[in-house]
Structures are given as C-alpha cells and as structure tokens.
Length: 474
Ligand code: AMP
Ligand code: MG
Image (cartoon, helix red, strand yellow):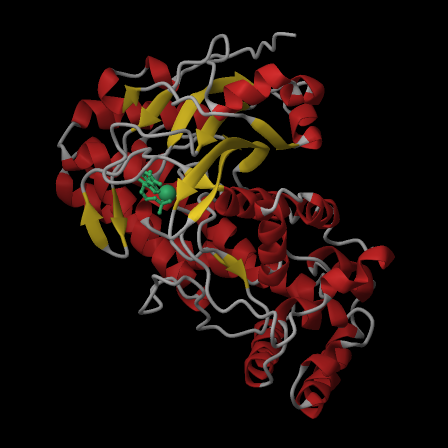
C-alpha cells in the first residue's frame, strides 16, 4: 500500500534563505505508537493508511512521502528575554502542506527526526517522554476548544536517545496551521532583509489573515488572536512555561509543549518549568509576556510600515489594544465559569474575590470550578467557610440567571491533563506499555462530559503524586 498525500508546499516555494532543505535521518526500527484517527479524518486523510508500515517508516524518517519537500525552517528568537539571532528547526522537519476538505491549509511536521543545519550542539532527536507529553497536552488543548498545533501520529525509532541515560527515541507528527513564529520575522528583521519580511508578511496574510490589507492590519489581527488565546489558557489554568518569541505563533495557535502544565492548586505565581528560575513565565505573567513578544513582532514590521515615527505610533496603538481584548475575553470566560451568561458591573469583582480565596485556600483550580456545578467546591478550600461566604454573594448574583449549571458545564472541564497522569503515561510508555497513554487521550477527548468510569481521573494528585517540576522537551 502506498500512501499519497496531496502536498502543496507554499513555504518551500519561498526563497532558499527561509529554510534549509534537509532529509530526515533514517532510524533502526520504526514502530507505531499512535495515529490520531479523528484528526486524520478531519484532515481528509485515511487513518488506516497512516498506521500502515509505509507511513510509519516515513514518519520515522526512513523514507520521504511522495510530494513532501522536507525543510528545516529558519527562525531566531528571544529566549527568556535574551536575543538569539539564529535558532531554527534543530530537531524538526516540515514535510510540507496539505489543504484539508474544509479548505484550511496545514503543515505536517516531524519533530525528533534528526539533526539539521540548525541543531547547534543538539542531537536532533526526541525521546518518548516529550513526544507523549506533547501528544496528550496538545490534543487536550484542542478538546478544550483552544487553538493549538495538533498531534497526528507518534512513532518510535527503535534507537536510544541519550539524555542523562539512554531513553527510547520517538518522533511526533505534528500538524499546525503553520509553524511561522514571531521568531521567524525576527530572523529576517535582524538581518535587515526587508524583502524577506515583505514576502513573509504576504505569505502569512494570505495564509492566516486574508482580510488584512497591510502589515498594520496583520499586527492588529495577531494581537487579537494572541489576546484571546492567552485568556483561554488562563481560564483553564494552563501555564505554557516557555513563552519565548520563537514559541509564539503568528496564526494564534498554542505551540511548543515543553515544560507546560495545567496547575492543580490555584496560585497566580505558579511556575513549573525547571529552567524558569525567576518566574518570567509564571501563570499570572502570561498576558504581560504576550505583549512583550508582540512588541518584538511589531518592531519587525516597522520597516514595512512607512515613515518611522508614524509607524511606531500606529504599532504601539495596535499592541495597546491587547489589554482590552484580553480582559473582555477573560471576563467572558470567567463569567461562564461561575455560571453567568449575562453581564453586570460587579462580575469582575465577584470573580476576583473567588480567585483570591482560591489562592489563599490552596483550592484546586479545575475541581473548584467544576465543583460549583454540584455543590462540591467548598471541599477544595483549606477553609471551606471562606468559600461559603463568597458563595452567598455568588448565589445572589446567579438568581438573575436562567441556566447557571449548563453555562458552567460548558466552561469548566472535569478532566485536564494533570501532570501526574502525564508522568504515569510516560513512565509506562518507556516500558512499551501505551495503555495509560491511550486511556488518558480517550478521557481528555471529552473534557466537559461526566465520565463515570473515569472518576479517578478527576482527582487531584496525592502528596506523593504531585509533580512540582517539568522539563524542556529535549
Ligand atoms: P525549544 O525550547 O523546544 O523551543 O527549542 C529551542 C531551540 O533548540 C530550537 O531551535 C530547537 O530546534 C532547538 N533544539 C531543542 N532540542 C534540540 C535537540 N535535541 N537537538 C537539536 N536542536 C534542539
Ligand atoms: Mg520551540
């Protein structure tokens, strides 16, 4: 059986300096971990064909699919605020693009496929841990309804990857609206390559924001997309963990599931990433960091925006719209979380009062909000009385609402990818047992449904299960 994907590779038609043509490096023994059937079908691909040995071999990098033009994309970026003039795909290859039945164009990328000219000192590989982690969390993000890159498949390489010890190697087949980042613009801006900036701008406008007419329109659109995305993250207790400019997409999709985590107990200063010593990317800092990143993006567009002073003024005004868009979306989402479908003046204060008590009471973020539906929220607080006194105000407010429960049911997931569950799935996968991984994915595909046979997956971690630190996906 040969698999044919209708590749149409618009990025590979951009000039040579946008990427390096690079083949995947073959591996010893490709093996299938998973194909994402539902996603494959949505993209117009045959899941059975994607699970066939020919496809598994191609995903592991041993063959090149007909029509694919593998490239490692060039980009730069600010990592923890420090400028790095060249990053690029050091362990990933863009195979090409396909247009789905719904007309949307998507990238197919291999992550963990071997060294490229951008690998620097890295080996270009991934071990099974980060592959499993990204698969679970990106698919959970999609099921929660937030824009994200997706996981189409995962395969093993049959080769060890050396980290502190030998670990099984794996490759993630990632799908994205595109892999173009703020850092892609920065790469060309730093080289004062205005022609490339213009080509890239036209490319992303055509691809992601066809209504945009000018670079300023593009900036407006990206600012709005990111403001809405981050408000969505906040509403589910998600901490990205490494919001470097190379990890922020132009499309507005969440990308790069490295040291990310959904928090258990609510804490606005929460940090999981082992390398985020100063809490730059703490939960509560995410909107601010997004603005910082967007300012970097804006500065890349300035050469395309005409007279400098006017351009700076317009770009600044564009980014300054972030707080308004973010706050409106945040309020919309958190109103729904406490069952409010209508808007009243005191709502933001009511929500803030709850969050303050949650932080003081070490309340589990997901369980507390979901617990509002069935009267179980108080049990999440170290001092239930603190919740009860808030709940009096809340009940008074919800008397003016029609269907509080169904509003909350649609906004408060019962199931999130908790760190301890991800870790258990990884530990099993290392031994070749993918059952916990599959079971977790099945549950997380319906995060808002009560699933009686999965009640234990709603539980917060026990003291021994708590995962305090997450690590970069290398
Ligand atoms: P990340 O922190 O995942 O966004 O990666 C930052 C940069 O490091 C990107 O240029 C990656 O391609 C590169 N990188 C990360 N891990 C590896 C690896 N194992 N081999 C080569 N390059 C890597
Ligand atoms: Mg990255």
